[in-house]
Image (cartoon, rainbow, N blue to C red):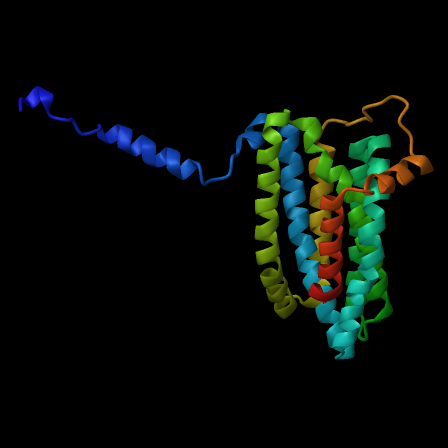
Length: 262
């Protein structure tokens, strides 16, 4: 066979490009972060906030057990968050559609920061009180889920539809990282600065979100006649009827909140 008829080996550069293409296929698409400045600010603030939430989700049960030495007392924290987790997202969604979103999110995170500051004060007492921890668990779950629809649906206003799957993957990925590292950092904080310092750390995460969202452009309602009404809230609950996929998600969360979180 002549040399010209022999099959040539692919160039090394083509092989390298093929390898890099296969590697990129398994990595997160960072295009949304390059596409929109407001999405970058929102994503950064939300990631830091989620990290703080995971820390507090570890510190509060630890402090309850430290005060009571009762696993039942720890389990009751899940019961406190049960109703807010299922009711407030629907109500919060109605508010998110009817108000200026940036101002709404800032107010919610300021309130969360104040609550964490009050918990830091309670934790600093010589004999911390138990009942504020249950009040905090209920109110924090309520404010968190009330604010969540506005945060979760905001990227749809900032990015073209084709990038929404990538933005969802980014948020889910970094949410998983926060869920893994948050409890570890919480343990370090409890050993070094105790519960008081952990709550103070959470205050700064909320203030960081406020700073990031403050730099974003205003996000007014999409409809000029949008308003918060009881009918809009009822429509939100009515939407769940017959949606078995959404109902199954609520059922799974109910099981997790009842048996998994404690």
